[in-house]
Figure: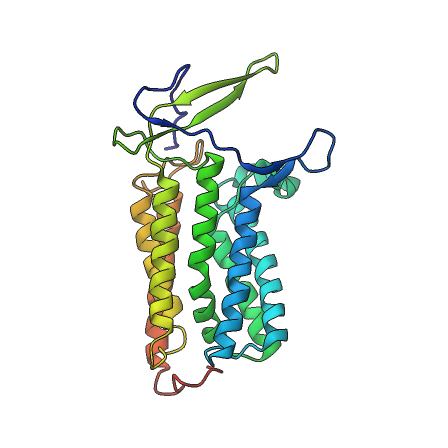
Length: 298
């Protein structure tokens, strides 16, 4: 089973807000190498800046083993890991046919396509590399990255809303949004249609996958007695998986992407993430007696 093409109309349905936001902060004139500065790119930048600030705060307050040089290396590793992981994750998880038929399409990032699950995998790989480079505990760094992820997800989902992408399912709730649908005829002329009112699921995800997880991980991270290393990462993975499964009930599956065991791919991959999170929590409890929770190197 795959998601069907959406229905659009020549005029917007009366009584609902019509999405008319520009994806550009600054639009460059024709002829430039880039078409402009996009909100989506700035969302990534904002997430990394937030991470850099918090890493500095954690170190100053004795909650992180990363000194300033190690913080810089960690941020650079995360930038590479998250961006590469998000792109490869999208190609493997959601567009595998396109990837294997045209592998070079992975570099066509201007066509869109970034996976949050892939970005998480990339972040874990970057964390593993950083833990070996600075000789810091891998589980401890996983906990740290868990406290930063919510902000990045929040900024990214807000940018998805501004871009008018990843919209929700059709609904008639008062806060439903009408998104524009751009298409081209055989002559190459652009036309605009209007989707039926839909859930602003991007904002639901920004609130639950972003702000909720950020609040929970910060609350748990600053406990007077630190949690066993790895537990916070496990809790964040479980919470993300749960709220993502819930949000998928309101989000329209990607067009042309098949379901797995009757579930959207986002739900299926989130269930795997929940299992991984449970494994981290169990492992952290098992290691508790062997590794004092106050030791930042664990």
